[in-house]
Structure formats: C-alpha cells, structure tokens
Amino acid sequence: MYPQFSFEITHRSSKSKARCGKLVTPHGVISTPNFVFCGTKGAMKAITAEQLEATGAEIMLANIYHLYLQPGPDVVAENGGLHKMVGWNKPMLTDSGGFQIFSLGHGCVADEIKGRRNFVGTKGKTLLEISEEGAHFRSYIDGRTHCLSPEISIQAQHKIGADIILAFDECTPFHVDRNYTAHSMDRSHRWEMRSLGEFKRSNNNTQAIYGIIQGGIYGDLRRESAEFVSTNAFFGQAIGGSLGGTKEQMNHVVACTCEHIENNRPTHLLGIGHMGDILNGVKNGIDTFDCVHPTRLARHGGALVDPSTNDGHESININNARFIHDTGPISHTCTCYCCQKFSRSYIHHLFKAKETIGGQLLTIHNVHFMVDFMKHIRELISASEI
RNA sequence: GGUGGGAUAUCCAAGUGGCUAAAGGAAGCAGACUGUAAAUCUGUCGAGUUUUACUCUUCAAGCGUUCGAAUCGCUUUCCCACCA
Image (cartoon, rainbow, N blue to C red; front, side, top):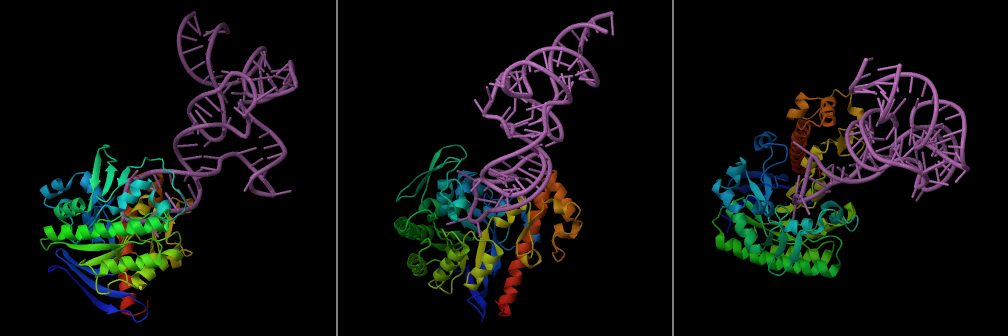
C-alpha cells in the first residue's frame, strides 16, 4: 500500500524503548528520532526554506486548515504542489486540521490543553459545531462558514501533496470529562476510518497516511485507541489530544500509549517540543516530534541553550538586561549562522530596538539547536546511553 | 513691556474640590509560550517596610481658602503664542 515509503529501525537501545530508524519518503530520508518544523501556513515564520535547509532540518509540516482557507488547495496545486510552492524539496507532512477544531474552539490553546484554567477567550470562538459529518467553522479570515470533514481534509491533503498526511481527528481538550473524551475518541476513530477510505480512493502511492491516537488522559482509552490505529492500514501513527495538565501526567499518557502501539510503524508525538519532553518521548519509542515552540520562542526573544549550562532552564530570554554587555555568542558550542557571527549583546539590542532580524537570527539558532539536539539523541541511542 | 496659554511620575499625556499614588500610551523590569488566528500575551512600573497590608513623599515653588486641593485664589520662576 505504501511502495515509496518504508520505515527501518536501525538500532534499538538496550537501556530503554528508544530506537533509531530511517523513514523513507518520495522526497528523501528522515533519520529518526527527528523533529518536524512547523510551517503552518506554508511558510516557516521568520526563516526561509533555504535557511531551514542550511540548519540540517530534514522535514517540515504545513496545516491543512490554514491552507484550505488560504490560498486553497487548487492554488497550491497550480503552484506545482506544496514542495515546489514553498521551495522545500525534502519530506513534508500536513496536519489534517483536527487541531484547529480544538484551538479555534477554545480561542487559546496552551492554557486549555495543559489544563491550567478554563479558558475565557478574548477572541471569539470560530468553531460552530462538531457533527458526525465533520467540524463546522467560521473562517477567521473572512467570516464565511466552512465544513471540514475527513473526506474534505484528505482530498485537500491529497491535492496539496505532502509526503505524510494525517487522518482527520478531533484534538480532545483537557477540560472535558471522561464521557466526552470517550465519545470524542470514538468519533475520531470513525473519522479516521473515513480518512483511510478517502485516502485509498485517491491513493497514487506518493503519500502515506498516519492514524491518530486519542483517549485523553485515560490509560484504558489510550490503549483502545492505540489498538484501533494499529489494526488499521495506516503507515504510521501519531499521538494527539490532551496529554494532561502536568509533565508527570504527560509522561504517563505517553508511556501507557506506547505500550500498545504497533511497534514497527513510525510513531509521531504531536505538538511536543521541550527538550525534556522529547527525551522522555524518545525513551518510550517515539520517532518524530513537531512543535511550534522553537520558532515561536525565538520570535519572543527565547534562545534555546543546553540546560546543564543554564541552571536547568532550556532557554534564555535575550531581552533581559543582563545581556546588554554580553559580547559572547548565544552558545559557544553552536555552529549556526547566528552564533558564528553575532553576540548576545547585539541580539539583545535588536530585540530592544524591535529590529525584525533579531527574531530571524534566534529562529535560525533555535532550529539549528533542535537539529543538533535530535542528532545528539540519535548518537546516545546508538551508544545505548538512553 | 502688554495680553493670553501652559508647567502632572523616566518621557508623552488624561484629570478642573473628596471614589487620586493619580486614566491611557511609551520606555524600563520580569514572566509565559508544547499538532501557530502568536515577531504575541501577561504582570510590574513614586519611595520604604513586617510587601494580597501598612507608612511616607508627590502634580513647577511658596503662601492661602476649605473638614478636604493636582484641581480654587495670590505671589514667584520658567516655557509658548500674539501684540508693542
């Protein structure tokens, strides 16, 4: 079913469930574990595809909800498909839009998914209704109403042409009860079957589809969902939905989900990107991650650093006054363009002066940092040190 | 020299008798950010302490009116405009 795709596990750690692998796609090979960089609207924010490639990144993603609304799948196709349009001739993934059912339904993502509080949004909710057919939205761009269904999502993803596509699901929120989570999971399963059916109808062997495991924070539901995805003809699987309100809860959800997944398929952990969380995921057998964290953090003045050199913190805030006279690089050991050429003092100044190149430089650094971090993880696995 | 207008916290700027340590910006300081409606959002922002509370000093300066003044009156200083 996936002649141009393969996933080969090249090494398994003797110390944990961590593994190294080669994920082969029509646009190239991804060494796993690896990180998928987010170019939601068909563009990485503050960095060009060429600069992204220079960091050694191997795969990026785009989001079908955003591209569906603007500029539309047909325009992407007119431009020769997603890879050609965005100038990235390496593997690409598209997210199905399931996350937007959640994020546009709650107005604020981070607080809700981590369970910090019941969100009271300043932005209006644009999710109108979730029915068996699909999710009905009001466009945040022009207010027109749209329906995103499994069939529509898969057709759009087919037309847009990423290598790896995701089944259409509902990203289950945190502040819902077990009953809602269970029913949401069942509906996601039905949507995933429809996604798979639509995928098979349009399949031309250039794409592979991942199923998505839901079930919220409930171990038994995660197990049920993992077994559902594993027993259907998906090429790989992604773990989605709410992973709980604390790191401990997330670790537990990831661990108990990974107990029940199909071991020989590539496994993706959706939306996770802190170093510690990635390390934890890898030890549970996760192969790929995606997250806006490195790029968003960069635009806000956060530079990723080795926590062991920074009191355990994964980033520094370059806006802080302590960097005014710091003429050293962000990292002495980093070989990125930013660290090779510019000082913390200068980047601090750029942020204070609101020069947009500051965020661009930190984006280059953070992306490069994550590429190096994932490479380091692969080396540790090969040596069975994690 | 004359007439009018003005002087508010680091800066800009509301406020014309009590609800004012004083709106709003900006700057400053700090925090958050995990399948991106985010180059965004939040807190703090006179001083001090026993810091979810209390004390002290503030609206050019001084004097006064009043139970009470950034707000009203007089004088002084400095700015701006126009007229000589």
